[in-house]
Amino acid sequence: MKTGKSLHAFSIFRNFLSRIVSKEFLIFLFFLVLSGAFWLVMTLNETYEREFSIPLRIVDVPRNVVITSDPDTVVRFTVRDKGYMIAAYATEEAFHPIFVDYKLYTDGKGHGEISAADIQRMIYLQLAKSSKITSVKSGNYTFSFNFGLHKKVPVKLLGKVIPGNNYYLAHVEFIPDSVQVYATRSVLDSIQTVYTSRQHISNFTDVKEITVDLRRFTNAKCIPSKVKMKLFPDVLTEESVEVPIEAINTPADKVMRTFPSKVTLKFVVGAYRMRTMPKNPETRELLPVGFRVVVNYKEVESRHSDKCHLFIQATPNGVRDVRPSVDVVDYLIEQR
Image (cartoon, rainbow, N blue to C red; front, side, top):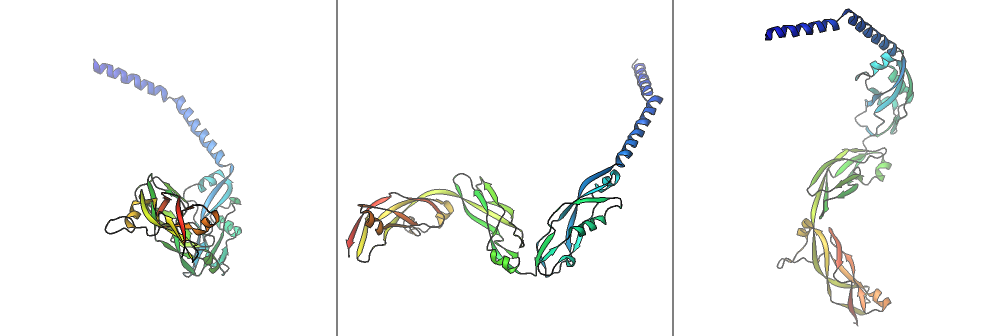
């Protein structure tokens, strides 16, 4: 019984296919393909315009010459032709780079210029005779060079770097920390620092290492053009130190004494920096090396007040947000 049902179903399916693949259907399919081919031929025979790009390279540069400012590496141009030629140009390897001979376009004095007419002529060498270039987009086709004149310039960070909460940026390290800059003497004299491209880095608590580009100069070239940058965050901690108060601008025949003679300074410092600050070897208390707190004799002389203000005149590197426990103190002026 099952075999009979299967044969009956197969027979129905076969009759269905025979009705589909009928003579009328084949005729319809033939004319559909024919009309599609005719439409394609008509479409490809129309005239079109399309923009293309082609690489530009300077070749045969002498060994003693350094190109300090390159021309654009891509030339953009628009071609008009039949659709089938435009489609052929659209393939991946339709155009080969334009190779420009350095010796033909240099003035021998540090500059060179590739004319738009020459660029267009070299593009035509890769086009069919029926093709027409309707436009070549304007670009920078000039270059500068020197004969190896250079100097070593330090690298510095440009931008904003903010570590995570309760951290601060303790140190920035570049590898290499200096680069060679090639340019004319006048340009080299004006360059004292090479900066990174502008950075915006935030919310990190571990050492961060990235490769960054260096900012470009007009008519100058940095070698290398990229450096490795390491950012070292450090945990912030609040500390204090007792610092003696000094009197400044006191006349030679007078002595100015303050009460108290010392003041406690509170400040914020990174944990690593804190470990390197000088301490008393016996008590391990922080020594006031690098801190300076003063009172100004000229201030009390002009104000005639019984108290004088404290001024923080110096703090060690890496210390921030320094504030005294008091802002004013008593004083006494004695005759020598």
